[in-house]
Image 1 (cartoon, rainbow, N blue to C red):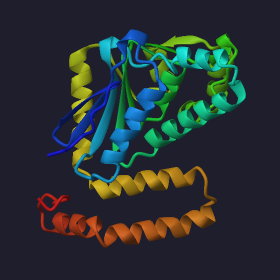
Image 2 (cartoon, rainbow, N blue to C red; image 1 turned 60 degrees about the horizontal axis):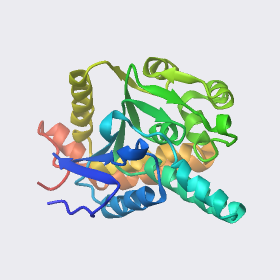
Image 3 (tube, one colour; image 1 turned 90 degrees about the vertical axis):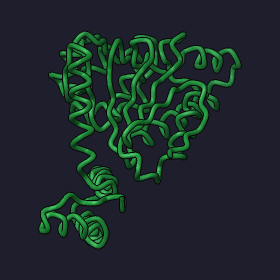
Length: 267
């Protein structure tokens, strides 16, 4: 039995060791607010070390993924005339939120329907795997309203590379799910709900065959490749490999040689 926290701006569903988090603020097209981030953090605190939750799907209610950061909250910073301090606080909170999603130990799937705009596109880019409908709308609109895609820019660049990322951020161009798939924002393209369900289930099935600790450690290694020089990475990777071989790796090797399914959770 998985005990999840009570949240107001999200809707949580869990089935077959997989958590689905619905952004649930349809009155502002599922914009990211301070309260929504707090809800997310409460969920993450609960599941962070729970290896029985094997993956997380992020979706938006009412046919829209996410319209970005809540502009009403940004306006309140302007109205309060405390721009420097409050703007930095908000930006840091957003940055920590995007980083936390990106480094969750579980596999994350982002399902994009309707629209993923500005910070919503940034949130999508923090996921491990992105599935989009072909008619979904994408745009990094920040420069159109005099802002910068500050905290999301590393994830955009990581997804599409420097050249395409620069074009998307500097022009605020709007593009479709089809284009998002072509340039690498999305990993899979679907046109119907049945296709979406089939693709998501296929990914889940593949992930559930893998060892949960190995998944978490592999994500940690991938993160380290972005920041550590290769000579330092060699030692980290060696420690990582030996640690896994002494735990899940032992079960994986034995189960393969004994021609049986591995028991990852001592079930």
